[in-house]
Length: 67
Image (tube, rainbow, N blue to C red; front, side, top):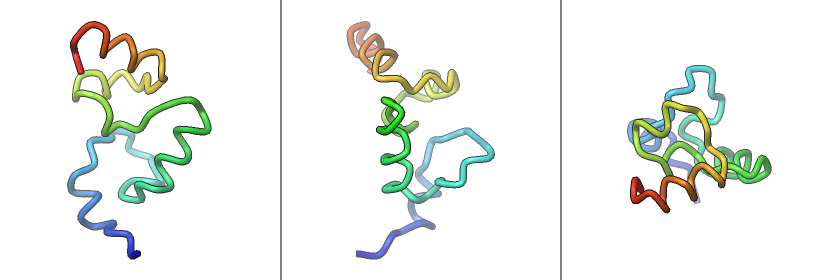
C-alpha cells in the first residue's frame, strides 16, 4: 500500500508547524499512541489548538459532548 502523503497533508488538521509526520498518518498515529495520545484528527479544531492530545483530554471532551 502506498502512502497518500499529498492527499493526507491537505486533510491534516494538525497545527504544529514543526511536525515531521504531517501527511504520514501511520507514523503520526504510532508516535502519539506510544505517548498515550491521539493525533490531531481525533479532535475538534478548538481542542486541537490546545496541543493536549492525551487520552484523558479526549475522554473529557467526549463526556462533555464536545466530540
